[in-house]
Length: 96
Image 1 (tube, rainbow, N blue to C red):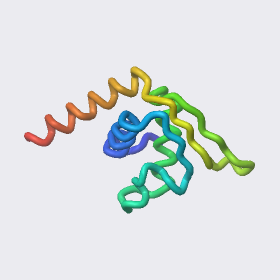
Image 2: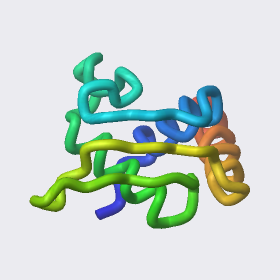
Image 3: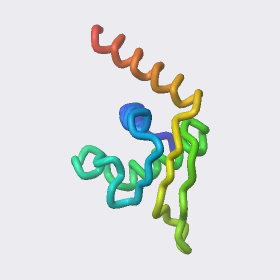
Image 4: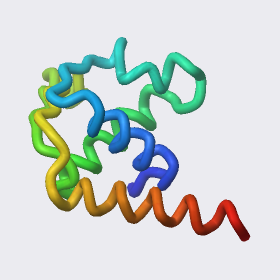
């Protein structure tokens, strides 16, 4: 399932500032700690971004198939293009 655009934009922006990043479910870029997004939403979005080749890295899964560690190396070219597109879209819609 595709995550919300706002979450994708926030994740890509944070990852653009802080690469490489080592994350676990307890320190998911402080997005879930701010009660903005649930831990499951952030994990799902990271899985989506990696699967769609917006970021490069590795996700480790436990025996039950749950993600427990993320190593995000960087944004890919496709990820940077997506971030630029989402940023421009946000600027355009804010003036409407």
